[in-house]
Image (cartoon, rainbow, N blue to C red; front, side, top):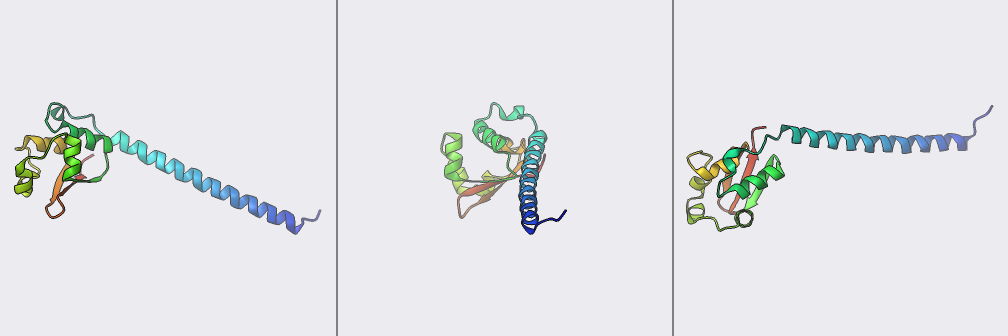
Length: 131
């Protein structure tokens, strides 16, 4: 039995198609595994955030659950449903300090996030260090 060149080319093309499909499936499985891992690592929504005026921020961060989230002051006000206090504008480094002495800071600290303010751009970066 003799194999024709055309048959070899067909087989080669079929192998290429199958390899591409396997790569797509492996990528899909990898994405599904990584999203399942991040959901498994997410703690229950902290009780200390439930009654806070800043609960909307807690819910947003918890819902997003990204490692790093940058929000402008406008974004924050939209999420919270009210204007940030004057102290957030006049004393931003103090206002966004990661201390539990500020009851509103618990809205991000309880979820494992730390806040870092960008004074020039009037934005806050929340980075998840825990979980």
